[in-house]
Every structure is written in structure tokens, then in C-alpha cells.
Image (cartoon, rainbow, N blue to C red; front, side):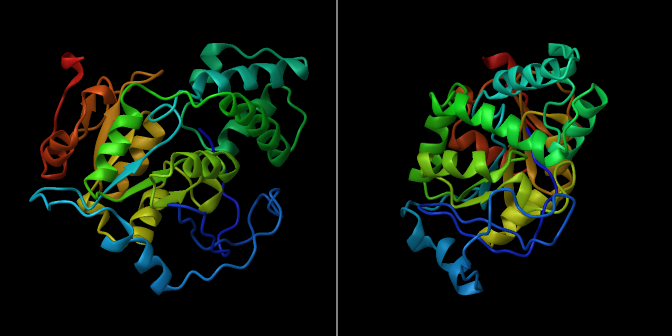
Length: 285
């Protein structure tokens, strides 16, 4: 989950190994609820430096290494969906409505604008930005109690970093959740959050933005996703895509690889996907 088209036109770089941002224009959210961003230069030189070999650990070159690996966050790297579902149930019940786990499952991977509209249809008498704030606050507090890693996720991030493969976090969640997570992990070269783009997933803009900021061809990248909405975004961008089994079982389109768990994925596996193979590793977990 879950972001909302906000305002492109403010370039922003996060500290450590993170660099964010597509240009932001005024959009449906009005003023950014996180407050003004300090002016940060986003020149081509800065982006070039962040994606240069000197910015990453040196490693022997592999013939089929991906140009970068692009990661969805919720459900793919960390198991936040139960926190989102609990926050949605509490919000709807607070306004006298009923929200079931089945209702919550239909919103996995959705942008905040889509999620908010459905919550409003169930009686939540708040504006989109108010719904976003309440849900993000609840989920952020839950994550702060301990990062709920999916099996094998952290180990794979570390292995790719050690091999010198650039990595981007491409999430529909707001920057208020994505940036602290990325800064804590310290392994992402670029972060694109749901409120960094005008057209969130399922539009390809988030993945195209990540590839542009990394300075790579998206067609040479491998993207990992766990929802139909995220898969649509990644596939439309032209990246090689891997569907990860999570809370919702999805039937990915032709050409999309499938894995049952990141615990069974390693760099050679990702290289095979980058080289054009379509793999189904669900039976190996």
C-alpha cells in the first residue's frame, strides 16, 4: 500500500543511501501535509554521483547482472498489510461502519486515493488527506515497534548491495513511511514514494522515475511486486518482473516470474530473470 497523487515539482534527496524525487505539481492533496521541503539541488551531477560506481561497493562484474533491482515495499519486503488492515477496520468502525478483512484485501496495492474513496463509501467522513494521515500514523507506529521483514528480504538486499547492484524502493506508501524505512535499512540508492509521483501504481510512472533517477534503462532492471496493481505498474514500465506470493494470490501476466518466498531467491536467480528467463520457483519453497 498506499499512496496518493500529490505534487511533483519539489526535488528532494533523503539522507544516507536514499535519493528521492520526481518533480511535484499542485494536485488533489493541496499543500503537502508533511510541510514544506527544504530546497535541495537535484542537478544531473548530483544524480550522476549517487548512481556512480564510487557510490556503491566495488564487485566483480557479472555478464547478466541487472542494471538495478526495483523493490515494492509493503507485502514484498516487509509485512505491513496486517497493520494497514487493522488501521482501516479501526477507522471505519470509528465512523460507525463495518470493514472486514475481505474488504481490506481488495485494497492491497491500491493508491491512497483509491483506498480513501472506498473508505468514504463505507461511512468515513474525512477528506483524503485526513484519511491518509490517520492510516499512515497508525501503520507508522506499528512499524516503529519493529520492522516486520518478509523471509529472506533483508538478506537479499544485503547480497545485492555487496555485489554492487543498485537498488530502488518503489512504493505506493507515503514518504512519511518510506523514507524512515529506507534510512534505517541504508541499502537503497533511490526511493520513490506514492506522493512523489502524479500517477501512482498501476501507472508505470513510479518505476520509470526510479530508473531515471538511477540513470539506468528500466528494461534492464528487475522489479519485485506482490499485488496486481504493482505488477501492472512494473510490467507497463518495461522492467523484468517477479511476482512474490504474499497476502493475496495473484495470477501474473505472461512473462512475469513467480516466487513463493524471497528466501529462495539469490543473485544468480535475479541474473536469469534479467537475462530474459521466466521462472516459477513456487514449488521450491
